[in-house]
Length: 351
Image 1 (cartoon, one colour):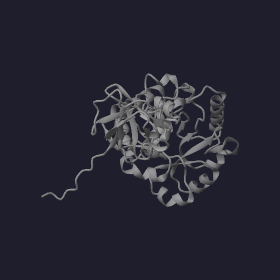
Image 2 (image 1 turned 90 degrees about the vertical axis):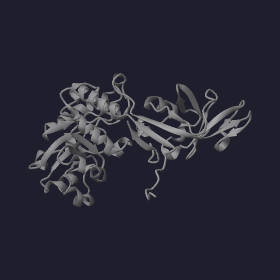
Image 3 (image 1 turned 30 degrees about the vertical axis):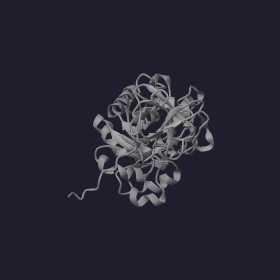
Image 4 (image 1 turned 60 degrees about the horizontal axis):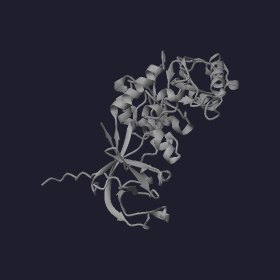
């Protein structure tokens, strides 16, 4: 008699396409020209699973990874140490020093206070320049070459605020970054995110930092033919019921049946990242048959219209329409929110 714990079968999953992830990185690397594409893997690789993503991208040739904080750096340390560079974008607080000083990852220093805090360590670092986004980074007017004397600076970087738009801010930030590089230098330079890569070679510098487009996000038309969907949520029908004309469905009766038809109840909801913006607007699909979401998305359950698929029954699985551009239009959510918000209850299954 076996003492092994029985496997718990998930009621909703995310199918993740390894080939699409790798080919997206390769496409962005090619678009980066003479620069080398790194990978932003913060927020658990935008919700897809950081260890799985890093291993696949390292095998494809990626050698620079960007995380938000030291917790995220620790989660991939055994994979990257001695094999790839990891930059911690939020920098180094006083409370971070005990871990940061023994970590192989580099802080991205965002303020003069962080520079002073790290300078005596003799350890490698990156420097963030505020070129106009006014989030993190050192202002160009506050730069003084003497402040960085003797420091082991790997990358000097900045971050584009509006690269997904054709606006004057892009060129203005480029000019500010170039002005900063007249004062401070490192081994390498970096400015472009996913959308920034498409702005042209003058934005590429030495390293690009794609994030959203690695995971299927398309911010500019030029990426439509080269970026593929990576994440495909799927859910199981846990009940089929028949509505009669006039029956109300879900919280606050946001759907009322005009005629008799079947609905499928899916074990997935806003706790899994399928948010209420999809109420009466989202879609699931089965064998090319569209199954609209009916009524309000609740925490753990979604109702879908089975009018065009009366053969579907309890236990059948359906695919969520989660092309990030389409899902964004359906829900009013940004592509970033859609991908990073996918919940931990959804089992990740890499193909």
